[in-house]
Amino acid sequence: MTSSERLGLSVVPGAGWSAEDIRSVAMMGGARSAPEPALTAIAKRTASQLRCMPEGTLRLMNPHRYRVALSPELHALRLKLIEMARPA
Image (cartoon, rainbow, N blue to C red; front, side, top):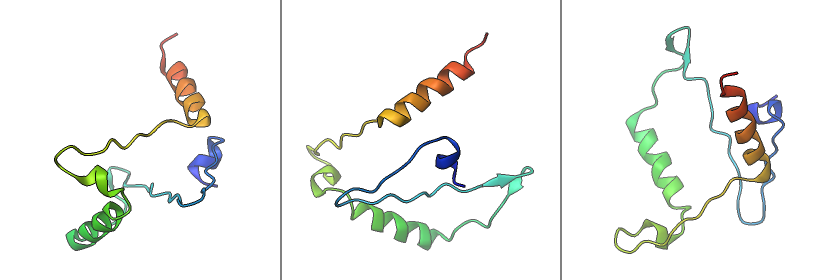
């Protein structure tokens, strides 16, 4: 079961986009749980991900805005977590 499933969230890829769960355990018992990725692998993944962005959003001068929003489910989860974190 994924973290999203445990929290009752669902991600349904739509036309022209996909979702990738990139979360992983980084630390366990005070130590790294996996070796650090090579810098070349990080650079390659970053370049690949940037190629997915609309060209206008990557400009340094007058870039287009890349708007994002919370889904209703994520918004509800956010409110629930805030409420849980509030002192009694």
